[in-house]
Length: 208
Image (tube, rainbow, N blue to C red; front, side, top):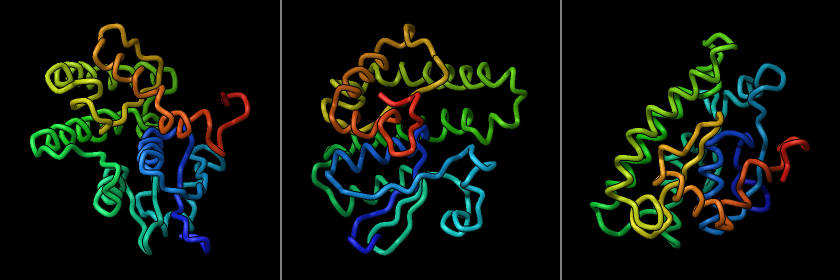
């Protein structure tokens, strides 16, 4: 934490995992400071010795809070939920909590890693967009089916508990449930202030 006592979030504006944590911090009203880690500049600032000492996986986000450093977005959110339970991000009902965790793991473990920058670098440049779109589409096919049985206003019932984010110009027409939830989430203040287009490290041409 900083001298002011604020948590420090190591983040990249376009990182979906970083955005997920920014949303959780905003929903819980936690004031924090951002240290941008540019995943492209200088060959990737996440590979610097200083950042590798902070997170040996060389990934964002990382959160310094309460005297510890936590990596991995879902672990960070779980910690925030356990230490700062109001407002809650997980339903009280254990079955609904299991659904939230199931969907979170599907996205964080089954979709995002396949279209992350570190993976795309292993694919020929002209094939990267297709690769990413295929990874997202495959995951969305499953997610759409699951959400049809769990969704209310949001992913699980009517409380905000999960945060969707997608890139690479994926057509959401075949996914009406995902699309409608995404639209409802994006109008919430916590999603707007944490949006990639409104971060300290957002390039001028991408700001909104």
